[in-house]
Each structure stands twice: as C-alpha cells, then as structure tokens.
Amino acid sequence: MLNIVDEFTHECLAIRIARKLKSTDVIDVLSDPFILRGVPGHVRTDNGPEFVAKAVQEWIATVGAKTAYIPLGSLWENGFIE
Image 1 (cartoon, rainbow, N blue to C red):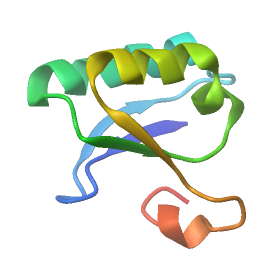
Image 2 (cartoon, helix red, strand yellow):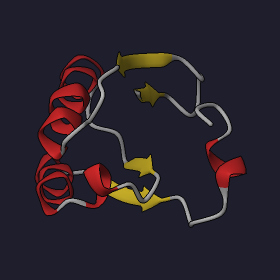
Image 3 (cartoon, rainbow, N blue to C red):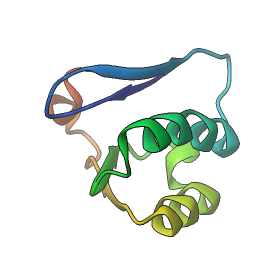
C-alpha cells in the first residue's frame, strides 16, 4: 500500500494498493497531487526499493523537489503510515 500524506495537514492525498509497487507506480501516484497542489519542497519516504529507484529519484529532482529519506529503524518518523 502506498499512501501519500501531507505532513503539515495530515491529509491523505492518494492511496494505491497493489501486490507489488514499482517505481513507475510511485511516479504515477505522486504526479496527481503534484499537479493539483504544486510541487512540495521535499518528498519524505522510507528506503524501500520503489523509492530509492533511480527513476523515482530522477523524476523527483526533475520536478524540482528534494528527497528526505527516513533512516532505517526510525519508524516513528513515519507514524501516520506505519
């Protein structure tokens, strides 16, 4: 399950449920909120393979945002999702 949550308002902007999510799925889900609400300064994610994929990193950089990864073992930093 991929949840896109606004850290400031705690609003869920998107949810994608699938057995397996690929980097193209992440880009697809992120693009709608970016178009509707604008590009955020940072995109915070865990270190899952779909987020550290070069395609996602390059896409986030191309649209003008930066990545902020949650350190391994720090699930409390992702409490709204975990």
